[in-house]
Image 1: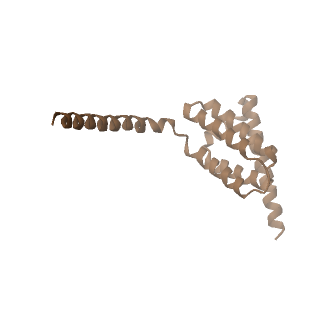
Image 2: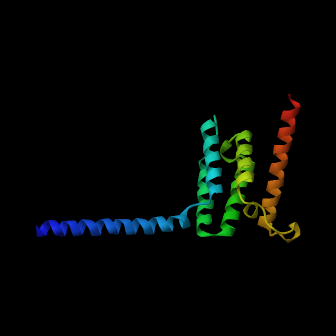
Image 3: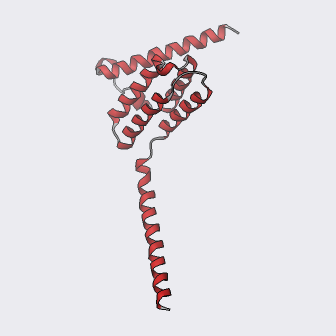
Length: 156
């Protein structure tokens, strides 16, 4: 009888310990979850990778991991620097991805990434060189997509 009682107590303590530890892990989880915009961009990269006939999308996914890690740590400069590199990769179509895939991913970035991360919130004359490069890249990429859309509209 005594053995059963100890087993029951040990089982109860184990169950409570599991509940306590799970609560601590789940309670801490939101601090380690990347922002939704990173997930949306990652999903678009995966979609383009699955649809692509050519190109290596793995560098893009690795760069998104860098951005995600910076976001989780609350490293604002790291997020912006990582995003700038990601956009540079798209602009140059690193890995041999198609123009269409690069433009689709870029469109998702523009729709998903918060403006404060995407572009500096100060006048252009006060930008540091890295911020200036990001703004210039956004302008060039947007213009390229606009021209592609205009050519596509004229072809109908």
